[in-house]
Length: 209
Image (cartoon, rainbow, N blue to C red; front, side):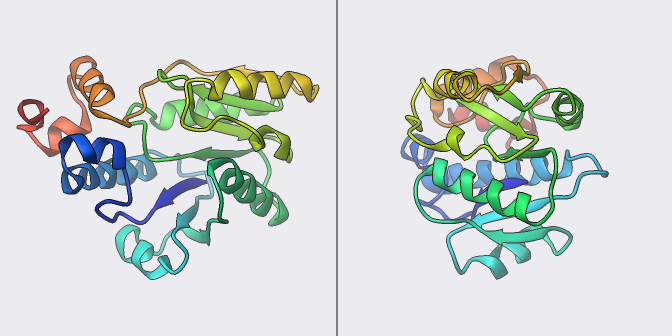
């Protein structure tokens, strides 16, 4: 499932927007989200969990009618993730993987690897370079993994791993990848990824940042 926001200037990628302009940050967000959905293996069932409430038509107009759309619950990221997982499990989902639209290096091969690992462990995490995670997969409900975490900090992954251990669950980690949240992470991505979808979309983006 994809945890997404409606692509509105000043609503998405606000940290990056303060540095490169909100319209530019929104274009970057749109490209990353569209690429992320295209990279999902065909055998996966995709739910798009969107915010804000009332943006359902906007999301369908943007992404198309081939996905299952669900409105996100309110609250912080932990409450929204917990609510998304709870709903997906209630609908009969198994081996559920959640991603956002921040990691242009997350491709179909990585998603397939996460699914393979999830058959053998309770939790799969994709560590982000900033100390968070770009992917989380669960075999069963585990709402305790989303409560009391210092979201938007460098402690997210560490606290989540500690919570997994305290819950008696097993986990595996994927390779570290870069989340694009601010100008510094965008620069690192462009320096390390010669064929970045972001550079392809805006050939002069490197000069802009």
